[in-house]
Amino acid sequence: MTMTATALQVSEAVQSVRPVSKFERVPCYYCEATESVPFLTAQDDLTGKPGTFSFITCARCGLRYQNPRLSIEHVKEFYDQEYIAHRKKTSWGPLTGFFNWVMDRHDRQKEKLVLRYVALDRESEVLDVGCAVGTFLQKVRARYGARVVGVDFKDLRGCATLEGVEFHCGLFYEQPLERERFDAITMWHFLEHDYDPVRTLQTAKSLLKSSGYLVIEVPRLDSLTFRLYGNRWPGLQAPQHTVLYDREMLLRMVQKAGLEVVDYLPYGAFPAFFYFFAGAAFKLLKGKGLNLSKAIYPYFVGQILFAPILAFEKQLNFAMQTVVCRSCEKNRPV
Ligand SMILES: [Zn+2]
Image (cartoon, rainbow, N blue to C red; front, side, top):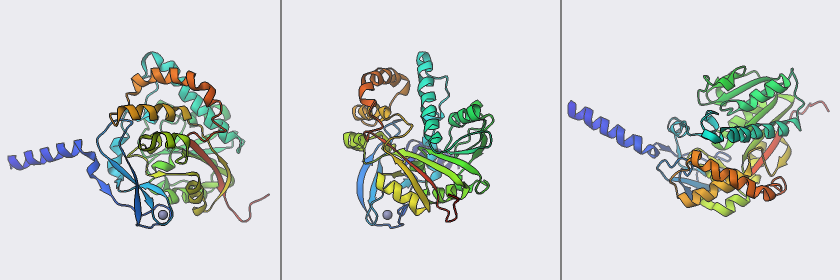
């Protein structure tokens, strides 16, 4: 009995240092084909957790996606306290002020993008899918008085920044949200993490008002930073990223879900500089993981040196892409 218990404990300990053993194979997210050819293998360059992860190219439609993938239960451990979107604002030492400015700038860029398409006011309802600690929603609520709803699969209910946000924890397409409720739905770096993107997009379509807009930002595979860094490209973010979208497949995916493409932008709210910086660091570190607390100093210096190039972020195809959609209702008022 004692021996069995010990054996079990050893087995659990081995599993806990080898979290990559919980894989499942998945057919293509776009066309459901199972035939594929290898694309590349990647490591968890961001945190340095062990494991090698495979991305493949669908032989039928060309979608690049991670296969096999970690089951949803096991990918959760990769969204730990180090995950940047979930970090508390006060944990950056003497550069906390700079970090907060960078994060706040990121939220302002999101706000600017949304405002191009939707006029926000007290009557507006805004949903952010994959809202993390909710700072973007908080900004929209404070500035426009809009009603704000956030969904995240991580339970972040204790966060002060989610105060006043209608927060739903769990998978987006399982939430009991009212149909045709929202003026704006945003997905900032969410869709590339999703385990069922077509279902997510169809859900978003059903929740949009006929006048509403869906704004989706994801990393762009056919970009300069991918060509520079290949299997150390930060947009791979293995194992969290399930799908790697180039422009064509992103547009095909939203159209498959019945959405109408209103606009396509070769940039996003997320700073392209992070991909230039992190890609170079990942090349040097070769899977050892990036210490964000130390990296913030060279990041700060690099951003100043890169400023002349980054001025062209919106014209050049560095790293990000944004697609803006609405539901294609036949009887839409003109
Ligand atoms: Zn396919």
